Length: 255
Image (cartoon, rainbow, N blue to C red; front, side, top):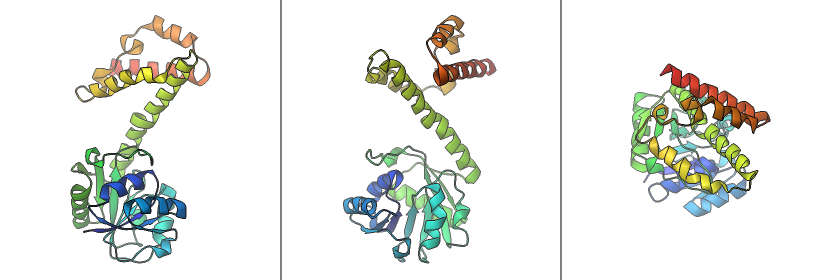
């Protein structure tokens, strides 16, 4: 079995560790907070450590799933190893390992993670890059054997674009749902009434492009409805509604 060290115990690390449990030997879980390391390590049967210098030197794979600005420091502080080092960031170049590790690369899962809600990684698309063609092949093989069949090569530029697209598709979309919840709450309406509509909207994307599935007053050019909606809004909500409606109309006109 592959011997793996999980460097990180947060949202991404938790889902990865659970997916690898039983398929690989999880040797250690590192977190700068020992309580977090112990919590995840206890579940997956690994040793908990809170000092990068205590990271085992004999693992096959080291998965670095820590905040972007912490990657370089953790890698610098860990002992020399012959293992394969991977970070999971969409926006950090793999060169963060250069001069620090011999074999390294990126294992970027295009997914939103929460520590308390595990993700079925077999359905997730992973975007990988290695420090050489041989290392890229090793990362691809590791991912397909233990995590997901959905593996695509993506260099730093392509991953940055993916991360940007994910902000629009996930983070901004979720904020729209937050605003919708605020609007509904003003009249005592439950947000869960919106869930079938959201689920149907997402389901359509399995069959139609986002442009093809766009509906609503802006897509129809219904100026009177949009004017009434704007009269009901103030501040950021009004500005966002106006900007997005105009963007939808512009996008439709370009098609």
